[in-house]
Length: 376
Image 1 (tube, rainbow, N blue to C red):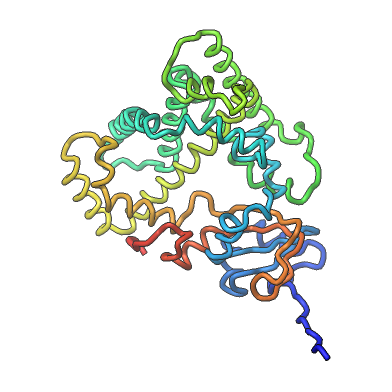
Image 2: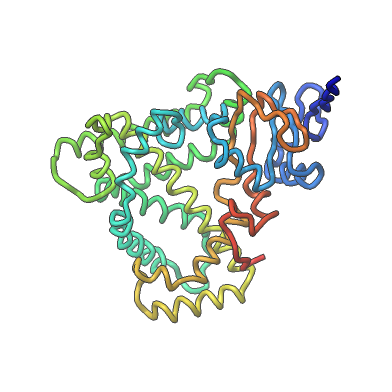
């Protein structure tokens, strides 16, 4: 007679109890980063949370994040809070999924070929020189403000060339309005199955409208000119999919908006935290300066110098490990992860991947991409 197989009942991962109605909404609203870090310390790798009616499975270990993003990405879709991004970016590469995403990736890939990337280097060095020349000895600076400005200038120049130079201030102000509201908009998208009317957020509505007007005008002018410019917009205008179809004006707008917003903010955050950490670790700053002097002397850097700037690369990677520009990634699973780690039942839940906590815990894990400790 065959023995019956007895399976242990699945249980939810551990987590803070929270309010009977609001769940854990109050502490996460006060300080999202600190709350997630506390949950990781108190409850471990997999933590169950609840925001009103929405169940959240918080993942803090690199191997679990790798499972969701790399090993088994087909089991997950982008979470509901991506609707807040789609409201700004449209159906760009960051917000789209499935076959439309694959088509767009194929269309945009030529813009990031090695030879194209290398051609943008002079734009970066010229912008950096202008910024440094504007700094005075002994002057106090808002470094993050400076990094946001220079990152936007570089991205805009690489994307659209001289056409954007006259509207950089407008673009910057609109981007600031959008980014300041984003966490609120993302939370609303997660909790509500519908978008709130635009009249409830007039500043965001006007900022998006202004950006659309600027970008649409650039696309119209460029299509009408028929003159090659050698920038990213030019490359995108001449990209074709497998069936020979180019991007529509709407697709171009969505991709340019995505590159403008996502491309400049994450870069500025990484540079700002790097400056902060160098200020906290003068011995690292001194060693970094020694390498830059030894490799560059008094000249400006070129792409050919990058392989020799090993310590510079280590400093930047360590900074991004300690303070990741994208500190949380959200996914949703419909089929679930039964029997996955800790015998937990994580079906039909939103997954929040806590990149900052994962990176601080495991510096040598292969999915962390960091193998040398410099600052910590």
